[in-house]
Amino acid sequence: QVQLVESGGGLVQAGGSLGLSCAASGRTITTDAMAWFRQTPGKEREFVATINWSGGSTSYADSVKGRSTISRDNAKNTVYLQMNSLKPEDTAVYYCASNPTGPGGSRPIGYRYWGQGTQVTVSS
Image (tube, rainbow, N blue to C red; front, side):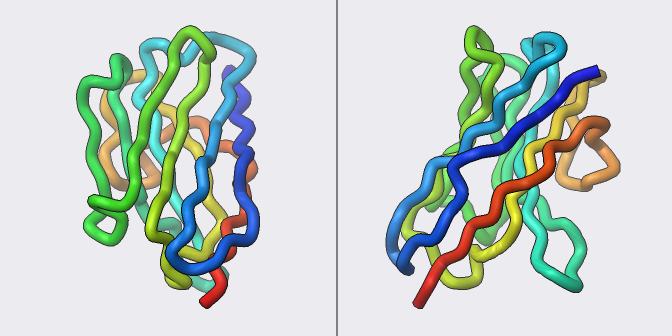
């Protein structure tokens, strides 16, 4: 069992930047695929980015590609999401997720463990 705790959310103006962190505890996530998703009220959870166990492979949703960077520090058992040039449509609750059995892909069903989420609000 792994516990994931997101942090770093907040209120930012359009065009600004935010860095999210996802700290894992309970066991190491060294071999887990990790991802970030986001969700707004009334909508399905949306894929943002994923990273493989080593950090050598990443994938992004078209909506954030070029503006966001997912990374991980396995020594710190932590995954990060750096978001730049933020837009009001980036406003959402951002969730960290892990899959211990391999690549999770871009669908929520591909991930076993989830954090509680952190709110990101981008004002226009």
